[in-house]
Length: 163
Ligand SMILES: [Zn+2]
Image 1 (cartoon, rainbow, N blue to C red):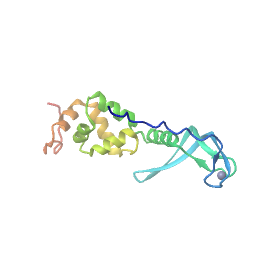
Image 2: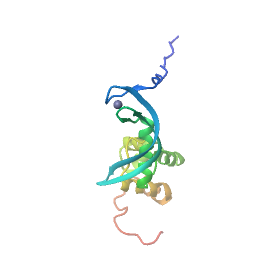
Image 3: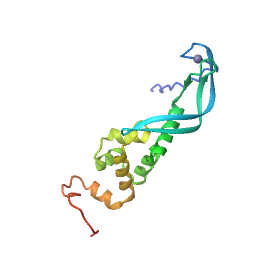
Image 4: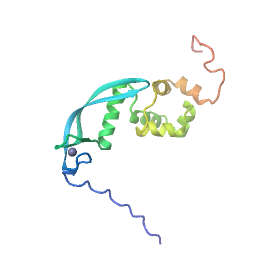
């Protein structure tokens, strides 16, 4: 008889107020803000607003703390600003085609790790890759061609009509 694995429950967050890592005062409280974000993508800087974002703010010094949920909300808003697919759209598209991450990675010519990171939101895909994924999801002919493996002639010359 084996001993069942014990999973520790997540530690409950400490009650407010939290200690401020900046000024050391116990005066950090949750608050809802409209966050003005500035982020870089492919050599350009973008400014955008994330409305109704929950952050944790020190009432003494104004220091703002962001948790994972806040980071995710900012990342989602940034993708929307850039017009990129969201992580769940990549995941759902792959699932709809009944492909593993490994299979999709092979067809797109990327590392399996990349698919995983796009789907969890850990990595923002490049614009070129975003368009490649959209074409792959949208067009069966693209899936057939990319799924066929290495075909050196594919795309090496312009084709004007579909045979
Ligand atoms: Zn403070």
